[in-house]
Amino acid sequence: MQFRQFTTTVVHTCLMLFILMIPFTDDTALLFLYAIAIPNMLLHWKFESNVCSLTLAEKFVGNKLVGNYDNCISCIVIDPLYNFPEKVSEYMNIVYAISIILWVFVIYKLYTKYKNEEITNVYDLFRSSILI
Image 1 (cartoon, rainbow, N blue to C red):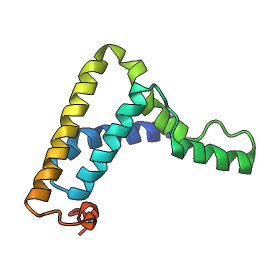
Image 2 (cartoon, rainbow, N blue to C red):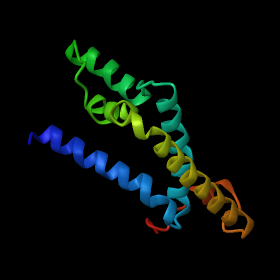
Image 3 (cartoon, rainbow, N blue to C red):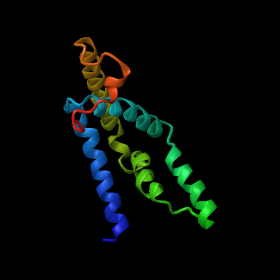
Image 4 (tube, rainbow, N blue to C red):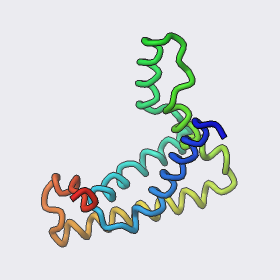
């Protein structure tokens, strides 16, 4: 297996673990990141758009530095994630349902933290118990 393919597989595995495991953590920063990332991913899937600002920025810089730069790292990592519906189109309703249910669960957890005054200001959203 080539290094690039191996790296891409590792990144995608980590993303899938992130999507499935973060809702069951109690880390406010990770829950907040999840609450922002999942709707973004769902919108990309719904509008069948694999355009990503990170990919566009990397292509722009790559084209300025080396000329024709279409085989960028973020393209290899992000394209399969955003093109995911093409690979499992018959299961997309289930994937959408699970993604939305987990997202609502995360929003509920953040709301509960707010009501219990664990989140009192915007800075608390970025405070990670993992990093402390």
